[in-house]
Image (cartoon, rainbow, N blue to C red; front, side, top):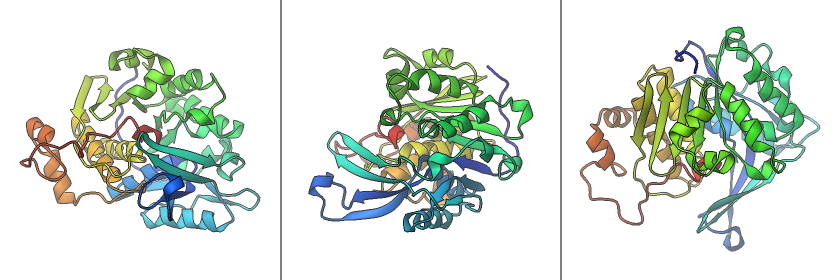
Length: 349
């Protein structure tokens, strides 16, 4: 395990594909939907938008097609306060598209991204700006599954020794089984994650990839390299493992409108906390608070609480934090319609 990570000045660069997204509005199975809502969806740009909401300078690095959907994607990410000046427009490849299909067992996502503009990204994207002035590069396990060139990009980013790059690297495992050839994801995602400075992974996701009996302790043994390992245990809690040991913070109770996107929101909140030099416990709380913002909306990006409310919630005692239920620590206990839900489905956002 390497030395503790200390935040440096500079923006966060979030690198990866963002697609146009169609979802039933209100949420219901696609077969029963009467109308669809057009939005944008991308794990890395979700993180960038929530970082911008927290006042952290964020840049999104990617490519879109020279088409109406690409212009919609670029405009939506920019409108959230994210720097999109380094996003490329590809005149030959389209912008990717996804369809969300909500159902009783969760939301299934259907992708139409083969041959997309972002799938042609390659290692050259790491040279020069915007990375030369970055404090942190955020990647996910989605990108290496898109194409050979995208895999080479992520591999190079994580193979570069920390002493040879001015920025740290965070990596959300974000396993999408449908994007990977059978049997190839576990070894590659483990190798990539172990080279990052900060890693996010769901416990159920890790068990699916690397063994059904894995615990947080077992995961740390499996991934000894990262300075910070964050394990999201579904609707129950999240744990940050650092050189100083493990810290666990329970998830918050809230009404869930749609879970997709909450994992990205959690990562952004946690990273915002780290970049402000917060303790791991407060960074985990900020991750949970940000995730709730995504859980309350049908899209991937919902409004944060007011800054004064965030500050108040970060100062709660552990007991009051555990009692907090969607805005009132003194309110009645959550009923069956208000569930602790944040990690197990959100990680596939």
